[in-house]
Length: 147
Image (cartoon, rainbow, N blue to C red; front, side):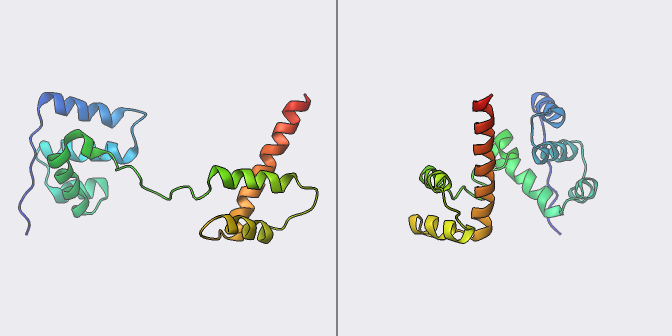
């Protein structure tokens, strides 16, 4: 069985964590981490915190370790999480030019054209959603400019 993890919070740290829990602009996961830390500081065991927050015990331990290593900064997720944008400004310009042409362009044709400009070919579904967004944007621009 792993050793019990306990943290001790100063009054200022406890107050800061309490404010984070109720702040409207703080991500939900950060609020939950603040709650976990405050519960641990009041004597709750890792298993009880995990049951209360519906977390795995390892997640509670990880949160406590992040607090010990990084302090307040450890409560937030690291930058760079999630998928990075794959379309560059040049891709959007090429898409605009193709949409302005008087002929019809299939999603497959558009995907192949953009794929030649990039190192990887995006799928038809991706280019379809981009095309739909761009067409809707163009229609909105036309409506606002005519009124």
